[in-house]
Length: 223
Image 1 (cartoon, helix red, strand yellow):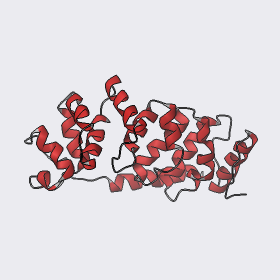
Image 2 (cartoon, one colour; image 1 turned 120 degrees about the horizontal axis):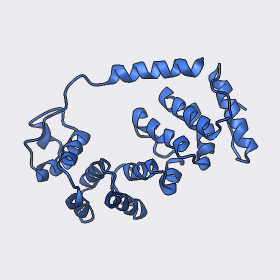
Image 3 (cartoon, helix red, strand yellow; image 1 turned 30 degrees about the vertical axis):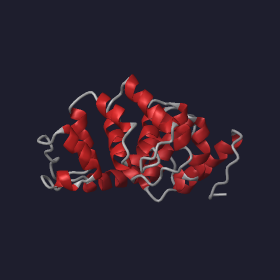
Image 4 (cartoon, one colour; image 1 turned 90 degrees about the horizontal axis):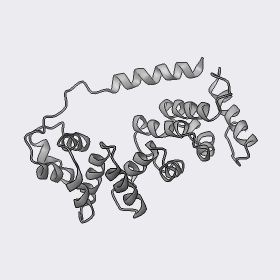
């Protein structure tokens, strides 16, 4: 079947793109030095050229409770550091972090990524505000491997308001990862639909029709 083939191609591509090198060793840096690295990567890269924002946030998260970093966030002037603190918070599933993420979204803080990580964090909890923001499609500037996890959330959370976005945009994405994620979500939202399709266009046409039957005003490319 076509979608099964696409999944295989996607899996092979993901495996081939996975870096072979080990994670950088940032254990010798203090917390303050690591936070400074979010704004000036060369501080950490001088010790290990593989250091990136996520490796830095991983190291900070290993050190436990992010309470001090969350407090710092609200008077931090550098948006790159605010963004980095969001990445650290993203590692934790606690009421404190959930409240923090909600406040970031509500106050529309500038973090350089249009608050994608706080929004995605909330959406993972099936929070309606997070899912609503994701369904606008404005976060497609994220990499495909990350963004597919966001598209999967619509089906996981049974969030039906995302159906127009899925049938008008996501199923036509240039990335197979996103198309497959949209297919998974649409199957979760329409569990009585066909389990597989012979052609991609058949899948797109079918779910567009189901969306119209449900009363959504959608304009699909297969029409």
